[in-house]
Length: 304
Image (cartoon, rainbow, N blue to C red; front, side, top):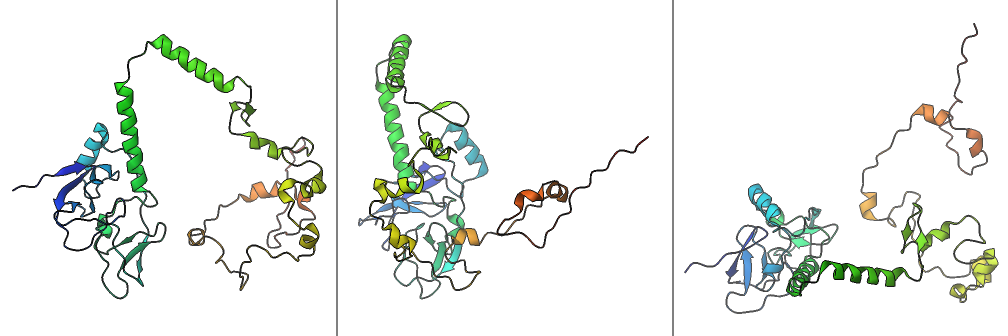
């Protein structure tokens, strides 16, 4: 008897009998059952629950380019996710299951691969079949898409409203929002409702958003009422975090993703640097001794 194929975003799911304990690659939960417990893609071998196969938002890596273009035109691809994983060989100290095919990672050392960013665990054989969805919560994205479809169905079922009535209702709702006049102004001069923090940057302390009165006003603020300022000045307070620094070039307290990036220097034209008035930087605590540009020489036009 021929099994039914369920096509979702290029995946070709078919009901499959799982011979070993398996976890769903979509919701990360265990797949229970005795018969054909779950659905497995016949192209990329990912395994999901029967209830989860229709919620898969990532496209199948084995999907052909012609199929991708057709799916994009027809609207089958809801989310355009293309964030590749950064897999490295990893040794696991406890039983770990593959987040792609759902089966156990066998071996004693270097059992599989783990993403440095999202900590996804996969078999070495499954790496080429993993979709580029690093850092994406596929379960949440699927639930969001399903909720969006339900809302669209509800709107389609609603009774049609005359255009002038719909416009009048929208104007009433908009008026209810802005009738108090609680608007602010952004740097662009346009009214906005989420940028009152701009007043933190006011140069005049008396007009600046926050505490007025300088240091005394900050000490008297309710937010700092539990701070012992005398002990803080004498460095007798225990800091919440004390970094361990072994050398001047220690970088363990910085994000590894930042420290592993290759440094890229942006060259500055020497003419631009020479044209800057160096007197404005006199008295700075740090000056680059290796760089002492000569002042720009302005050639005078010849006198006739």
